[in-house]
Image (cartoon, rainbow, N blue to C red):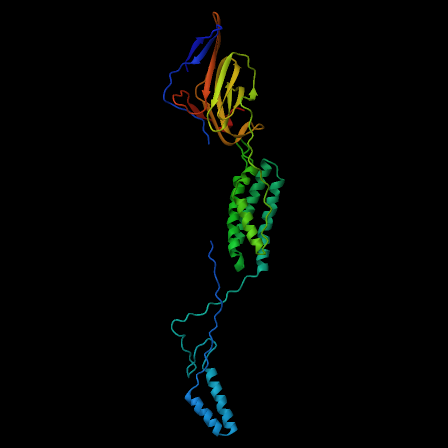
Amino acid sequence: MGYTSARTADGTATITDGTPADDTSHTATTTHLTQVTHLPHLTQRTPQPRRTRRTRQTRRRVRSGGRAAALGTAALALVLPLAACSSEGESSGPAGGSSSSPAGSAPSPSQTPTVDPAAYRHALTGALGPLDSALRAIDRAHEGGSLNKALDTAATKADTAATTLQTVATPDNAIAGNSQLVSALRSLGQDLKSARGTGGRCATSPRVELGTARGPQSVMEAGRALTALGYDAALRLPRTEQAKHRRLGNGDFVRDGSRGGLGRLTVRNGTGTDAVVTLTRGTQTAFSVYVRKGSNATVRSVNSGSYTVYFTTGEDWNSAKNSFTRQCSFEKFDDKANFRTVRVAGGTQYTVLTFTLNKVIGGNASTSTVPPGDFPS
């Protein structure tokens, strides 16, 4: 970076960046189930035996014969039609053989026994009970390692419950709801694992993560559907929190060291998120300033020296961790920021620098990504 100086009316001079502009630019990183319908069992009506001429002739002979002969003949006429039809509607031949069903007729479907609803309720309670206890433990856990452990345990219980219910015998009216619950439990297990906090910078609270996850909502919907059918599938899901939007005022110092020079730094934040700009000398942080999106902030009285300029952007500033919690980026300018204060005849020269965090046409400052752990506090 080169600098040029200009003398002011009061005799002081300002050193400004005189590096020729090129075309480079810079910005901060922003960020089934098939339902089986059981047909009713069709019972084929046994056809009534056709009266034959022989039968009528027999009856006429009965009228002309004795009473005993008439009774014997009538009994024989009744026995023959009954023996001619089997219970399945097939006719039997003289030798006792049975003929096949008429062409085009389908065999009647067999009746499938219905699963006992009480047995399914028992299986449902056994599968969901351990998971319900694990979910309650999440509410009692404190942020950090304790909460992460509770989330891991609940995730395992959710997967186990899904595996159990996937193979359990289910009443016909609960088949669809049980399948829906199995899928929801799998999704819940994955969301519980993903919500684990990292404990580092840009760490969103697990309770905020769960508040936007789909798995808990799916479990709630599936549970309501089964409960409406008389199968209690209610679970006490862990409490969640809404995403926060904490931010400082534009130009507020996150950290301010000793400043007594004449240097001046202006930061322009044209990105879509708030930013914190930090200047360090060696391993020491000189100051950090908060710059809201779409705003400019100026730091005065910067001491002479060579500084590394870091900046982080994101949403929801967590002052306790000195970091944003969402959409974070961590970068630094590749060139040092050199501030000088020089006394000259008739006045003093001092450095004025302007840094733009978003890409601009003709920008002459490049940046590099910084690992979150290397970003100065």
